[in-house]
Length: 553
Image (cartoon, rainbow, N blue to C red; front, top):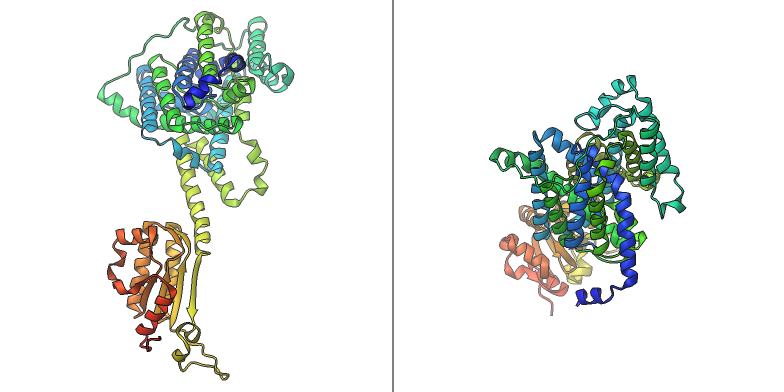
């Protein structure tokens, strides 16, 4: 039904928007794909091949109608690490790409896509800001006219003294002008001629006509890419697993976060599992044609939506436009100065940094600021996946502390005064001069809401002492909504505490999910069946009997 409605609603206006979106994003994506290809170490044309293969398959088979896919900053950085640290040949590097695509497709088939939406924003912000900083650092050497350094940003920073001692003035001028064009290009002109393309054109003209001393891309192949067979040896496949998992997870997170942005702009809902399948198929095709792996591109997707693109047609058309450019434009990119691409990428890196979050640092909660900072620093100094993983762990620990406070607020532990709860005939010797009875041989522990591992230890510390103070304790589960295994085992420890202190236990209102959790772990094995009651009146009568008081009518 939904497919029929989508086809029926596709009209000339939708087609016009898709055409305009596809062409606009192709023009914008051309210089960025070239730049990311160079930054990754695979070469400029690899960026274009990746934009074509991934862009087409992800658009056709993915789960986000308006998303544009292609080389991205995080994937280019990750691929540079693969080339320098995990592959000795081009075939081995592309084997990692193919394997990463297979892993992504399997994640989609196994329906793991929905979990990305649970990623805290502080982790996303730190990750994206770290990637932006990495891109800026990596482009400093080409902007100075120096050769790129093998390794990550730390190796690039170690190469700064030599680069500064031998600055190529032509490269610096081209990079500065290209960066300036990206920054100051009029917004009115961007609708017809994007700033990145203008910067590429101006930087190339400077290099060709006046500043020829600046290093250029050099000879690049033209025409269709050649099929590249993966390295299928046992050693190559075994060595590809770890970097492939890194690429797959990074691409999955990058793509699905972009899908969430597209949803917020179009008020639609993407299919995360289908999106992973499309991204996986696209990266498999990319690896087989020698392209740079990629993911959902946030900038391209936003531009596509703003230009009118709203269906898969815009993404597929973008790939076809780039293919047409590749078939006849290969010879024209040989003279593009690397400094021009560096100037463009410096602006891209700056835009990727989450300045909106950074401007609010003074207002951000301390825990969120710490998570963002840890993720950002680890992204720069270690690697992307490790940074995200540690960021998620720290975020989970912070969330656990908040859950602990919220859950403990739902715990009620009160003494039940004998006269008011057990009846007037339960009055004991403990009384004041005016005859008011203060004895409380019975106590009530009410667990209301949800209880998880977050509050387990504190529940023992708080409730254990209270239970030991009474002769009878009623544990009330009537308002308990959920109880995980850790909380269920806490109940068992509370029962052990009661037994050790000689306190009788009555379980009240035990039903539904909490009862299932306790029974599954055999927590109730030590509780006699007649100690489990449904109402407070039944608990009162049972408490009187356990305290040796006469039954009431």
